[in-house]
Image 1 (cartoon, helix red, strand yellow):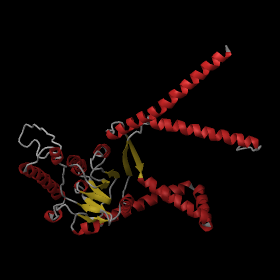
Image 2 (tube, helix red, strand yellow):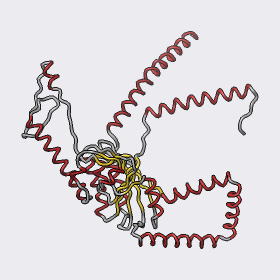
Image 3 (tube, one colour):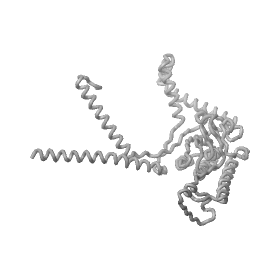
Image 4 (tube, helix red, strand yellow):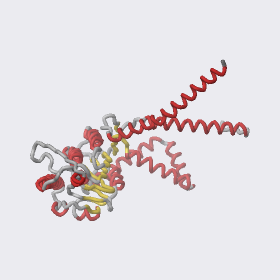
Length: 379
């Protein structure tokens, strides 16, 4: 009787092992497929959350951390810091009065700057835009601009830190229109460029009142490009017939599989020229002082050369310009970010389970080792 149960238990164990060996790889493959599908169909930011950072507070904390670090390694500064701390504890009222005086002095300095012609915003809003060729980031940009326009006034300034090599015409046209909403409300718009604002990226940047670019960033590429491969010769070689039926003379000007005609090529070229003309009109609308025929050749320039062509207004990095404007802002300086809520995939959950299993195994070995060596751990 006992051997029967032993055999039965052995059978169940073998069956369970087979199921696990088969199901785990299948589950991993299934999770990988789901993950790849998720990448092909990115979120529309419908479930995204808005993140707001106080830049003045960030800069102040960073400076305090550095000062504190210096005082740790410098005895004289450490003693001075302790004395200052004691003085502040003795008289809190005096400390409040000092803050009021500092604020008054700060406002007076800003008014002097305004008298010299420097724009000092009441509030500052900073947005980062890193664009891909598809321009899907417009969904994120729209949400961020919506949040800003809920509260911003013509006394404020919006800085868009822009990085983009350009891409699809309709997507970047919409991106530029989103930035135009800020200008149309009479709010000062500045674009900073650290690496590249070309083609559709420059289409966006040109909307700004002021363009600031790092010395070695790429600027310009005011042009339009399109191309498709044609496999007609390959099909002819293998005697494959391709049929294409359209309604409308120019429904399909160029084809990947059919035979292209000179008339079709001419029409396709005309369409590109029409888009290029709209591109030039957009740039000329917001930067009328540019010699558009000189810069709309499809070329790009380093920012130091683009300044001479009036494609940009100032040479500086985004860090330099933003920190300067934060110091010149009366009220708040906020960075606005729209982030997707990350959903954990089945693959990541399985990885975590495997990792936890290994951690538990290592801890168990460590405890056994400690027991054998009569070693006591942290109490």
